[in-house]
Image 1: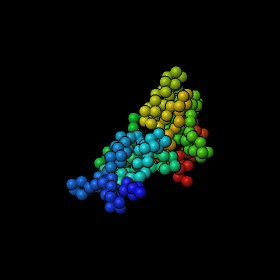
Image 2: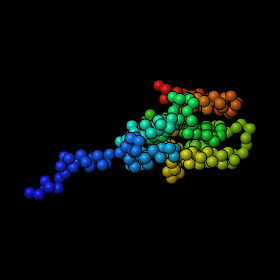
Image 3: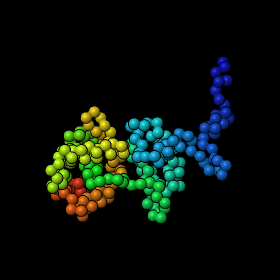
Image 4: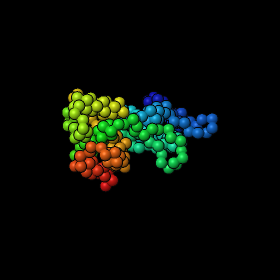
Length: 229
């Protein structure tokens, strides 16, 4: 029988494992394997990694999570990961307030954009609590935002254009994925728009005297605190 000749000896197996393992560089620092380096770049490029749509990167992130987190920590960044929702992104570490800022917060959002974020976050929390995907149609979005149209505005066509522009902006950010005539809200929205951020949005509207109906405002505040419990 020659089958044993095709099997690697313990010494050979150890040598192969050593070759596959990441090697230290000239300074003795452990380098990431190529697959993990690609995951790191994807995280830095943003906006996030979705395991449902990129199983390979998601799997590598889980396998080499500690090493990737160490590289992010070197840049004053931290990994935010939800294994159940299969989403991950990076944010600026809050441990050192004097650290250089490499990432921008959600920026360039106008009033309608941020209200849309709150509406979608509330929808996401509601559907997630039922074990369902958060899918919303264009018509449902328009109906949800109709209450936030400024009372002085009579330009319905212009408001509809503004809504479409806000939807497009969130699509480009990866927070909405088009599915026919509807959109799926990414689970990462719950992590990116934290309860504190949601409350900050609501507070800003009130300070600015924005037209947020009282009932809607209370509903948004309730949704903002759901993650705190």
